[in-house]
Image (cartoon, rainbow, N blue to C red; front, side, top):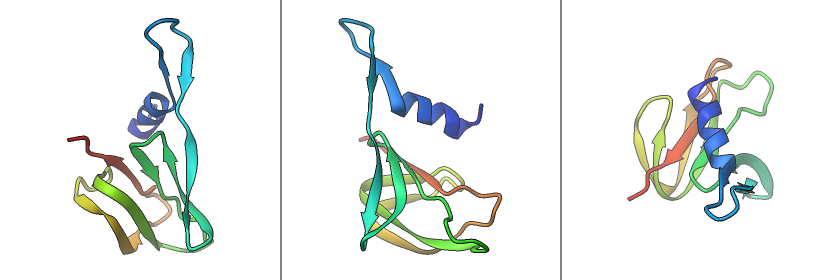
Length: 100
């Protein structure tokens, strides 16, 4: 299991205090200029896969907040758009919201 897999499991479900039944946190696509290009797992994990065949970079929109690039460790303040983020086939761009 990769680090991204572990974070997705934590973001996607947790137990409630009273009943211990699973509570699902939403998985939603981020709508950018009428295009679904990124998705959130819960509120704190943003994944931005490359969706165009042959592409090695892409623009990534980060919503409001502090976001850590889990590939590089660099922190960005949103809302912002990362232009031409390098994303060759072996790199899956994903970001974790930093909670204050």
